[in-house]
Amino acid sequence: MSRTPRPDAVDEHGRVADRLHSLAIHLLREVRVEDIRSGLSPARLSALSVLVYGGERTIGELAAAEQVTAPTMSRLVAGLEKDGYVRREPHPEDARAVRVGPTARARRVLREARTRRIRHLLGLLEPLSPDEWGALRQAVDALESCLTGR
Image (tube, rainbow, N blue to C red; front, side, top):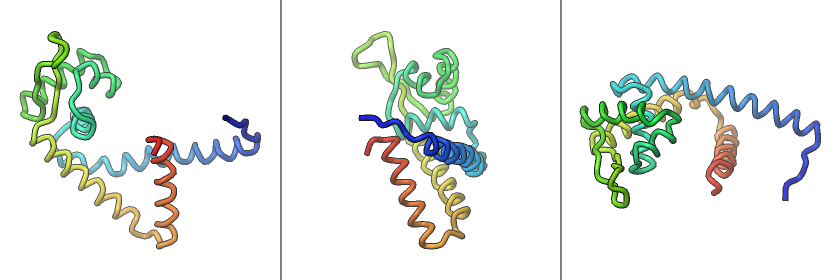
């Protein structure tokens, strides 16, 4: 059952949501500087991330996840395959489709990139007090619950 929030709560919640939006963009830009060391473009890293952390997909599913067209994703996947980051396999239920999955090389590159990002983030958060870390943990738990339903 949904409740209609009070107008003053909408304004306050809106301001918090606006700040969170801006901070999320700044935070991602800040840690993204570490991705240069992977040697892959942001588009390639993003597509590989979907495959490494989300599992095999068809070209169409991967294109939808990345919000690009299927022809654009086909070109991206062709380059990733040529460079040894993905492999294509026949789709088990659709003879016209293929499944794209990450190789061990892709998993290693993504794991290393994620480790660099997390280290960078830890450096940014180092000045937080124990109480602030507790508050951050609670905020992350709340956001995770909203986004994943857990």
